[in-house]
Amino acid sequence: MKLNLKNPVVFFDLETTGLDVCKDRIVQIAYIKVNPNGTEEEKNFLINPERPIPAETTAIHGISDADVADKPTFKELASVLVKDFKGSDIAGFNSNRFDIPLLAEEFLRAGADIDLSRCKKIDVQTIFHKKEQRNLVAAYKFYCGKDLDNAHNALADTRATYEVLKGQLDKYSDLENDMAFLSEFTSHNKNVDFAGHLVYNEKGQEVINFGKYKGQLAETVLKNDPGYFGWITQADFPLTTKQAFTRIMLKSKM
Image 1 (cartoon, rainbow, N blue to C red):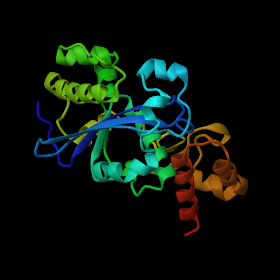
Image 2: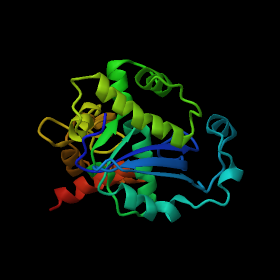
Image 3: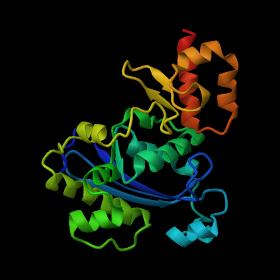
């Protein structure tokens, strides 16, 4: 099934130094940009994370320190990525929980002019889990009738994710071929930041979703506890979380 697109959609996958959104870095990014006219642009980059890649991580994706020693850093590559991602919807496999938050952190560290929170985000894994409860290898076999060779290679996983979404649309008549619908369908909750430390309530207000102030309006907490904002900015939270709290703090002073 051909995707019904109003905007380009970028299917992407990351290989990283680990699983910590705050501390780990990207070592490979691959993506397929699908345009509304059906044309596709495929790109694949190895990235120097500017830190050693743990041996246990290399054992999974096969990317070693030697492989990335002469590759560009994320900051050096950021302008190319912004050009391809900006104005597009984005899709991936388990992307809402990991790939998008980590990519957003990298963009913020690089000072890149892009806000991923503004685009529609389609997590193909969520569709699969809601419908079948499996992983990407099984999803590719189930929806596409093929074996996924070279799993944990970012480009192979990206191509598989793109094909799985098209297979899902073919299989499930209740899934609309519309990125806004799929973005809503694959959203786990109404997160303000990618990590889910802040969520929107039914009135569209930002609510703290962790710790001693869980369930309370963020704006109210920031007004009543002046030290809380300082703690947030100094603690080991994702940059997107700190950015969201900063936006709320500035809004409350207007």
